[in-house]
Length: 362
Image 1: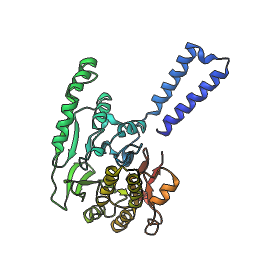
Image 2: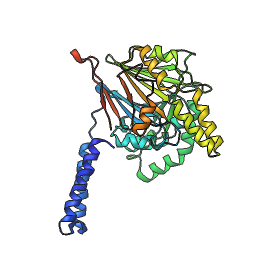
Image 3: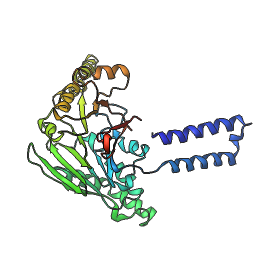
Image 4: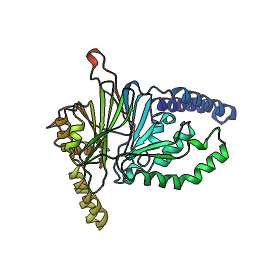
């Protein structure tokens, strides 16, 4: 939940307490309606779109891996100029995006790193949220070979829903011409990089990463007004990613903490849940450890390293300390563990603040 929304609900709570203290006025229907109407006004006035413009805004809509975590799965919003892209759309991530106040009505497209379920499972919810709020065209979905199958599947599964929505609300509110997904397929040679989108000062490049046996698997780099953000996608430590991330301001890198995963797998095995334990063990060979990600950031000379796709999520200080073992030996600072709702802002270069990076925790 955004800070603005928290203030709204805290204010509403205070008003309710005062009303309850005032001789039970909260039982009065008129008082109830007045309090709720005031909360609506505060809520709507707080939802101002200040994202993008002359800066890059990065908002984490999902930071978890598919390991049974309550956090949302992988999803990162990138807003710059008047453009807005979301990289991956894992389970529960649309709810986080909406709570963070992201302007989904102006979403230009979704960039998929690959087609594991934890990277695509919220596409249907994202489509509805953006369509209902006025997205002016069908939702473009960018990806490698196979993206057409993903898009066709969602369009088939949600096709009846599209018709229901327009039939009930009408073409003015839910125009059928804007319903559905459109695949934007691209191919990149192995160990390659390719510009897949360019508009004014914005350039988006895709690059191959190693996530065997999943192919294709990509990461993305955003360049705008002298600032840059790189998102790794799922991968082992990869030289092509390091080359693509050279001198970047922010490297957002997936990570798996192998010691914690092994402990979880052993605990499951001791309870007789051997198949689930084996599944966790199998993940060890196609992800990057926090130490390896720190090495990659150093080799790329990235200014800020952000850990995401966290396996498992370090949701308390003890696990966070265990998660970061060995990282401090490589990077004393410039390392952040992402949380759902975290917002990073990169202003355009200006004098001594050419490399300013603002991190706002939720």
